[in-house]
Length: 338
Image (cartoon, one colour):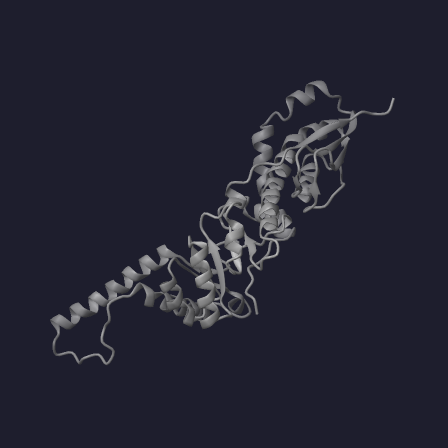
């Protein structure tokens, strides 16, 4: 059965995150005095409506977030979406209509456009990557390279664009990377060195039936997976433990061969060429076909198709969130009928 990370949907947890962000966003935009320009020029009784309009081709994400902005600023504002998150839009397409007290409408404008622009930009870039690998079995995944505080929102936007969410945080999967292995290896060497020191100063001690071997990074990969599995068994109750994914990073085919027998859920193939990726897929298929392979590192729109055609199952792309531009979305006032 395929291993899956938790996929972000619009739910109460995401709404809680947005409320936290809105508290800061409103404080930085309104300060103590509020919207001074609108208060000075717009009568308190004025009402109106405006269209939220796409000015670029792209994919929309964040419509529920925009509605929360409106209700936070003035509960009387009416938000009527014309499309759903994940919809493709062209310049001039109406995304939503906002109606109600004019003061609230103008005050909400920049904040809701900021949210929609940022999240729709992520969804739009994600859709380009998804389209680029169409027909291959590889799925496009995001990473933790997100804006602090915005992670669930940005991962939600990836889903709107047709991508998949990698782990949400350090709490919901084990991902053994090169720095973990480097430190773990040093600790193991230190423990072995201490045991050797004891031997040299206490020759009367009995000889161990399992003589110490020098630390091997390749051998350590499999041991790290087994130790992670043992930690899950000891510290996590069902069903959380059974759902906890174990993934490990390798950067050579030799390391891949060393770790496959340990049976991790996923092996991350870091910065491998398409040729090496094809070789990795062949070796995986021959040794443990149930283990999934994830390609990562420097993936671009120009290279992602060749990576997908290698036969890997997953491609993780940090650029989906850390390099996405904004989709240009504007607010156009709708004049009242004469």
